[in-house]
Image: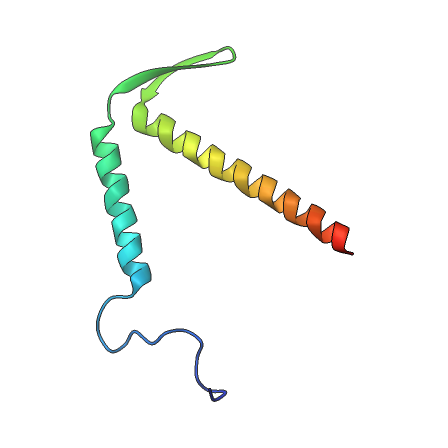
Length: 85
């Protein structure tokens, strides 16, 4: 590989990039999910009682789970890095 060659794939020769196709599929799945889950549901947590569309409850739960996973994995990586030093 020469120094002027890029490590990024060249998609100028037609076709769609896999990243674009994957993103489009995710967007389509999210839209289908939202359209199919519009019923209201009651959520009780600690002393909060709210009624929200089911899709909002599930999206907020998924986002909180992803955030917790990122925080825990970051703490785990820092802990492992400290042990190696």
